[in-house]
Length: 85
Image (tube, rainbow, N blue to C red; front, side):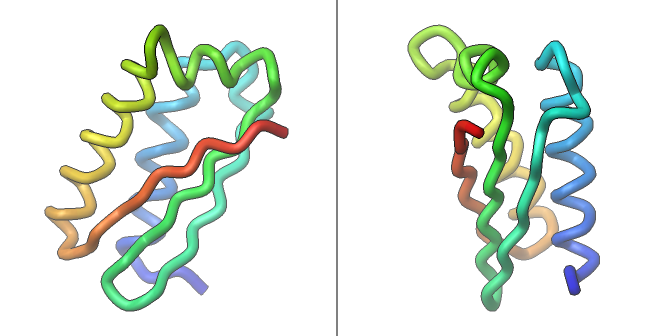
């Protein structure tokens, strides 16, 4: 069961990535919590991975910055892993 921080992070990533991809229903978000560390495994269809990563990884880096900001606010550290389905 996720903590309130884990749930908030999942909802945040879901809303953010849902606006980027063509098929929001195709994204999967797995949250792994260990102490104050939160690992966010983001999976999406092959056609949407390029949009999530962006040109030269800029979109992925921006997602990581926003995720880190939210996690810091919640007293956690976060890592984003992007996985192709």
